[in-house]
Length: 361
Image 1 (cartoon, one colour):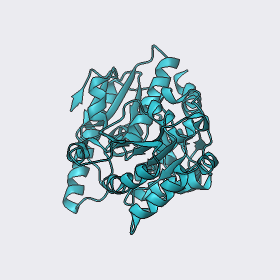
Image 2 (cartoon, rainbow, N blue to C red):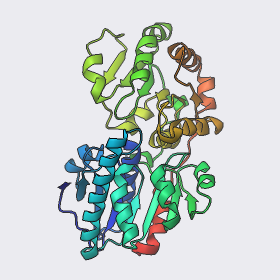
Image 3 (cartoon, rainbow, N blue to C red):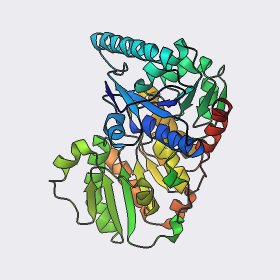
Image 4 (cartoon, rainbow, N blue to C red):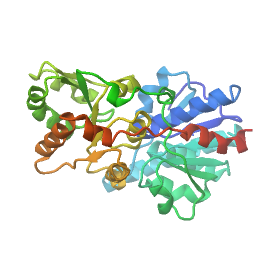
């Protein structure tokens, strides 16, 4: 287990991870809590294999990284191993928290949150849940009834947790997104098509963009492409011959700046990405990950489309051709882009902290 001196006594504990969609909302909430209660001890609990294992050690946040794994899509033998690791991590936290008891636990989902949530429930420590996606994850479903509050990123979640104490707040975004963004119609050539496959990349999306980019860039000489391909695929893809106005990068740190400069975004439909798109009002083509847990990316994308904030292109047969056709339609005229460009101010951190203040004071 990895740690940086986590102080749990009377602390506010944030837990959630495995993917950026679970981890980054937890960081946004922690930043808001630290600004509101500067003297309050704050600690993170996460997984040694999640995105948090690469982010927390270089951060100022005290943290404990535990040896736990996910259950979904694994063989029976690996499920048993995952269950044993979860039991061991739960027992460790429970013993520690009996002596050094946190004030409350805030969980943003993912398998990394399981040990802290089960320990909190065992010890009757108040816990709060945040579900970013339109479809609640299994852990949220299991523990929603005992939560002080389930914060919902999308209204669709409420109906799927009928007996829980829910509040629709949106999904917390980094502080950099809580500002005024330049209006998309104010952008001037060269226009930017920003492609986001998630922090880990997306092979089908990468391949589709690589196939269509040369033709699109020749058709629209006043456009260029910035393409986040993911660290795993960057080395192999960067050796390919690509159009001079098509730039590949492994990861984008200043996502607010990249989105502000984009006239159009092509992206997966994780909840955090959808919230960031709403906050900056950028038009988007969403390509949901077909095998996401509970099909949550598909539901997120369709919810965005129903609200007039994106168009959806599903993977499958003729994916590259359909994606190219939709991209060409939106790149060819500002009018259809403006039709799906609407800023939705994000108050998620403020609303969540208002609930927490009943416990933290």
